[in-house]
Image (cartoon, rainbow, N blue to C red; front, side):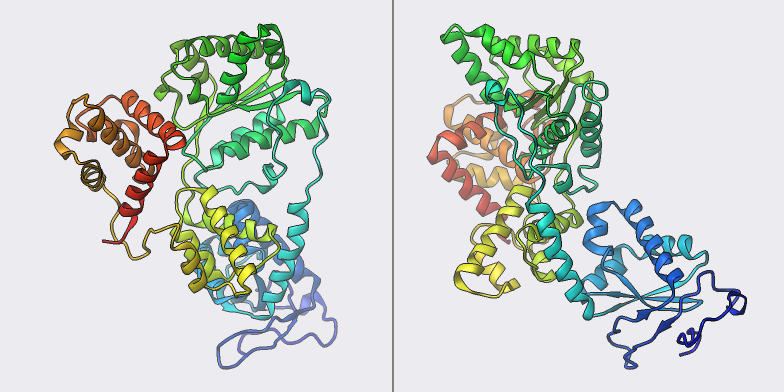
Length: 502
């Protein structure tokens, strides 16, 4: 082959090597001359291995661990010349994806590691597929059975929710949508109370807020088993506060949380409009902050959009505020691959892509869909294919891959108006009739869930409503979804209809 290095027959002095070659990579070529698949080549030269290791190390730093492990780690150099590197991928899907998305990044890493520019050519190497599958099985052991966190001596006294062993930094998939939130959580875990205090995480349901908060708890306990970590939801805080008043145990209640080294409170929006609970949390917050204790809270909206006392909002705004957005396609694929590895299985690439495109806004739903698919395949002894995924998941997630346009506010208002037997004009208006108010609130909730519109944008879409009105509407509907079966069914049917193809 023109330009290729000769197979290694005997050690050659370095001076005899081509001056254009920065690294002497002597390999034995096994090439399908039809130009189709390339088999892995046997690399003999130590320098070559070290150079490719350097490429991988650079790629890991620049791409981030989840993307690196999902797409780049399995790549192998099959042929190296002074002008070109042929890189093998285990499947056609991964070859195409890497070439489309990460060729530029890999090219930069190759130039930095090898000291000169080389063209990259990506091919399929089926023999690498077994290596990939073997690597997945090995990762399963590491992820499924992490070292157990030391038990906190006074954990029972705190009476808080136990931390989930799966919610650690090691199992959190980082992407553009959550990178800042992850960095803030890591910093808070490494220096509790000293940096980013308080840390305020906000975003929609199922995007990873709880995962990050509990990861902080695990990391703090791992570093110092004597640290007292209290994790609970705001709803639990309200319930315990009411019980403490009724049973006249306020001193016990205050001691429980004001002696915590790290206080993690999920869904802080649930204390809104509960004046006495807000007051108690305000004093708890001040006591912990004055002692240099770490406080992390989460919400579905930013602090300025919460219906809370101004004093409490201002304290939240004094720390680091960071949002978590719905994951982009690459992150969704990495999440599915990571969860599949935890379950000890390999899912075909086309099935993963189908699922990642089908479920776009909720990580919890994404992982749940994978578990549902695996369970069905196990019970029926069926191979996991895209057809099976469509049959199993189509009943639960009805977004059509062929839908060309996004759901608009007008789509939502028209459908809700028809479903509640009111007019769009009444939904946009100011009527306080019970039926119209509920229809308006449901429409706001659906717009928040399905369009990605901001609270002010939703308010403007309903005749210039204030963003606090939108927050109240969304919270009201969420409460109804949990407590009123009829409303839950009605809203579920509306969401299903909105996601149907035109």
